Figure (cartoon, rainbow, N blue to C red):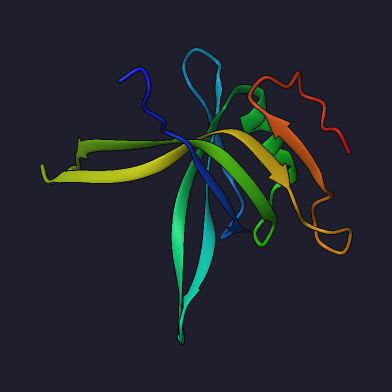
Length: 125
């Protein structure tokens, strides 16, 4: 499996403000979803992509991304399963982002810039 590739890239808009929380270790964890549209012949549709970020990137997302913000997200896909409170097995697929680029224009609530998992907290505008 060393030659396999798990990389996903999306451009979309945040469906709502990101939610940030902190793990017991103190690591920031930020969750948000983006709407990604597509068109095939006369058919148009939207897919919702769940995004998770960690550490400084999570804090930057929570600070600079808002509902409607247009972003480019790059990361890896991860599938998870768990049991809900009724004992039912639930599944989800999410993207663990390592790079997020802010694409919204000056008229939007976010200025263009890019952040990734290795950043020291500064956003290059």
